[in-house]
Length: 495
Ligand code: NAI
Ligand code: MG
Image 1 (tube, rainbow, N blue to C red):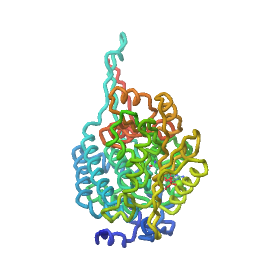
Image 2 (image 1 turned 90 degrees about the vertical axis):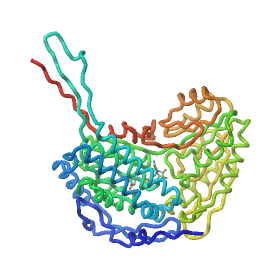
Image 3 (image 1 turned 180 degrees about the vertical axis):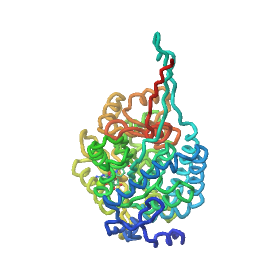
Image 4 (image 1 turned 60 degrees about the vertical axis):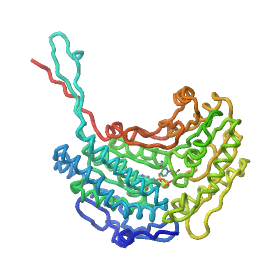
C-alpha cells in the first residue's frame, strides 16, 4: 500500500520558496521562479525563487559580514559543538518531514531518505566533536640553530567564505557532508543546491537557524548551475568552493576559480569496478554487486558499474544479479515495497536510455532488461550487459543509471590493468575469501575507496574522495575538516 506524504511535507511544499540570506527570506533579485518536480510523477510540486549573480553577491556579503563580526567563531568551541549537536537532534526530530520532502523532490525510496537523514545527524555529531580538536603543531628542536633559538608553531583558521555546490542525487546527505565540516572549521557557508532538488536544502537552512547557527553563517541560494553556481565560483569574495557533481563541471570550476585562486575541492564522477574472484562467497557477493549498481537507481558517484568476475563464477554471478534485479520493485518512493525509484529527470532518463541503445549498437549482449512502470514518472528499467569488447563506451563512460556492464576475466594482472584503465578512480569492490589476495588487490587499485566483501560503505571516520578525474581532496574524517582550514606558521625568535 502506498503511504502518502505527511501533511507537514505537503504544507511545506505550499510555502513561498525564497532564498535564505542572513536572517532574511528575500525574493530573488532576478524576479524569476523555476519549477521543481516530483520525478515519480513528472509533476510540478513547487515553484522556487531563482537566484542570479546579484543574489549571490548579496549572500557573499552576508556571509562575509558574519565572518568579520565573528558571529560564529566568536562563540566558544563548546558552544559551537552544542549547536552542531542540536542541528543533528533537530534533523532527527524533523526526520519524517525531511525524508518525505526528499522523496517528493528526488524520488528515492523512503527507506533510503530516512537513512540519509539519520546518517546526516551522525555526521553532524562527528564534526561537533571535532571542533574542540582543531589545533596546530609545534616545531621541534630542529628549528634551532647556533645562536638563534626559535619557538615555532602552526595554527588552523577557517578558510573564510565557502561556496558549497551540491548535487541532486543525495540532496540532504551531500548538503550535510559539506556543511558539517565547514561549520566545524568556522567558515561562513553559501549553499547552492541543485536546480532539480532545492526543497530540502531550504528546509535544512531553516533548521540550522533554529539550532543556533548565527544568521549569515549558512545561506541557501537556489538557482541554476551556469547562472547562480557560476557566479558563486567566480566571485572574488568567496575563498573556497566545495563541489559535488559531474567531472565536466568540475573542470569548469577549476578554471573559473583561478581569478582569486580560491581553494577547490571536487567530488566528481566514476566508473567503479567490482572484482569477483573465483573463491568469493557468492551469497554475499551477489546482493552487494546488485545493490552496488541498483541503489538510488544507479545515480551514485561510486556506483559499481563495471563487473569483472572470474569465468569459473561469472555465469552464476551474472545470473544472480539478474535474478536480484528482476525481484526489485520500481515505483514511487512512498511505496514501502519500492526498491528503485525514478531517475531525477526526463533528461537523465533519456541519457541512460541512450546509453542502453549505445550498448546494444556496440554489440554488447543484454543479459537482463527489466520493465519500467508506465506513466509520466521518470523510470528506467535495470539493464545488465555482458560485454567482451575492450574500449566500448558503456564500459568507459559514466552512465549514472541502473546499468551494469559485466565482463568475464581470469588473469588478475589483466583484471587490475582493465580496472585501472579509466580516467576515474572513486570506488572499487573486491570479493574474495582470501584475505591476502584482498590486501594485494586493494593496494593495486587506483581508487580513493576500496570495499572488500561489501560495497559503498561511507562513514565519517573515513576519508571519502577520488583519484584521477574523480576529484580533488577528500570529504569526511579529519581530512574533510582540514579542507575548510587554512594553516598558519608562526615563528618567534627568542632573545
Ligand atoms: P552537474 O554537474 O551539472 O550538476 C551538479 C551541480 O553543479 C548542481 O548544483 C548544478 O547546479 C551545479 N552546476 C552546474 N553547472 C555549473 C557551473 N557552470 N558552475 C557551478 N555550478 C554548476 O550535473 P548534471 O548536469 O545534473 O548531471 C549530469 C551528469 O553528471 C550525471 O549524469 C552524472 O554522470 C554526473 N553527476 C555526478 C554526481 C556525483 O555525485 N558525482 C552528481 C550529479 C551528477
Ligand atoms: Mg549539468
